Structures are given as structure tokens and as C-alpha cells.
Length: 95
Image 1 (tube, rainbow, N blue to C red):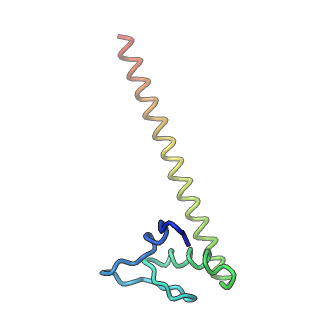
Image 2 (cartoon, rainbow, N blue to C red; image 1 turned 45 degrees about the vertical axis):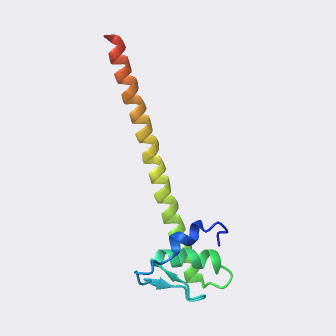
């Protein structure tokens, strides 16, 4: 668990919301099934089943792909904005 509480806030279920899943090992409530899968893979990796470990690995791979896609789109966007400003700058100075 995070000592500064950053992960705790993301996992915590608000008071007015019912949990959609709970951990089978520690009965902690979570907002989504995905959070439970990550929790089991990180906090209960020594006692989780092979299926739970596989689900954790699949979710981690999916998240890594989503993060790579986000970074790729962000880099392309920055490049395009830089190109646009350079092009406009060249047009202004050309006359």
C-alpha cells in the first residue's frame, strides 16, 4: 500500500456508492473489478491463484498498451503543434 495515500483515494469507494467488487482475501471494497484484479496481483501475489495471476498480467499489459498509446498520441500532438507554429512563423517572416 502507498504510504502517502495516493493509491488509496483512487481505490476507495465513496460513501454514496456501493462497491462493485470486493477482494476475496481481505474483503476490501473496490469501485471496479479492474481495481480488484490489480489489488490481488500486488497485495496478495503470494497467495493468489494462477488464474488471478494471469488476469493481473493481462490487465497490466492492457494498461501498459493504453499508456503507450496515450504517450504516442501526446508526442504526435506536440510535434504537430510545433510544426504548425514553425510554419506560421515562416509565413509571417516571408511576408
